[in-house]
Length: 484
Image: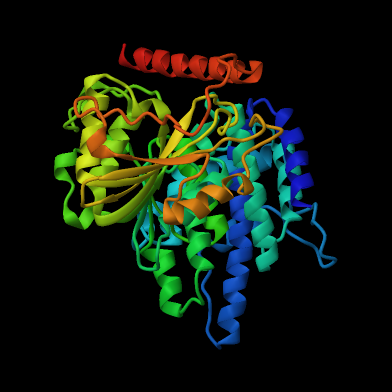
């Protein structure tokens, strides 16, 4: 039901003059979906309060409740066409009354860790792009048919929302910007193994995939006490996101998965000076896939001891600094980080090896990120003691990864098992840090167990890499234009 509804909504938005891409479809579906979800959430709270003899005061005022403006029903339970706004009346109500009303929640909320504040923040960032009030009416009618009352319904909804985000990532210039494959995230979470009470952080939060999967992991790790539930809701998950749309999608994704007031801030993480980070700002666990390629301005680079324009390298410095002593991290980064010979890359590898125990490197094949042929690795490290030995695992698959054949958890099962003991296999090996070049700290993932293969690459791999280079060139061009 959810899946067909989303397809029908996309068809309607495709006809609307205000929505030009998959990104617009997701954004516009999101705010309407969110208000319907909120309505069902308020009904659940009202029912729970009644069962304990309490009274529940709704967050949303009567005039702005879903059942009043979006889908007023008659006694027969069907849409009351006399009361339901449509056309210009509906568009005017949404643009002139509803959005300004919801924006005000941000300034009126008691604190930033409340659902009220998050509602205000979301609607401060958004605007209604659906120009036709008739199209808007059709979309609202479709979303009104969706229910979010049972656990199963919420579960199905959250997974289909993830699929929407995945499609949005594929539609963007760089699929990895919005969407990290969930089998990879789940694997990273398993290896890093967060525990109840840990503060978990992603400074490039995107659609909040890492935080959502860490939430599911902890939620299913034990029988939760009331105190555990509060800890997960209020004191566990933290994120920062620079881009407006990603920030909105990430916040809503977490709310739809069950975290009512996510601690996600709309800010440029890299604008924070590393020297200002204190013990109180640090986290136990960091899970992230920072953006690759983009170039940061000179004034942002001044916040870092190792000066570089490469965004991912700045993020890695930030993560090392903001991780607590004894804290654990799983970070996705381009595989060229392991061997680049520029001064910044060499200094960064030295910093990582000297201040953290880089115990595991997972080397991923091309095509792991659909739409981005960039080769990546995952760095697993613990802060506090220098690295003596690094265990590598090279994921070698008997197929090319892509849209029709994506990465699965089964593909990563051997890695998860071997990683526990750092065992040797055809795909894994270890190196001693004292044996590597002490000037370049080159950590290239060269599998000593793998026979040299033909240097001819599959056409699909070449095409994917060309796409990735095009995307990187576009990022650099965009950054240059911003500086002009």
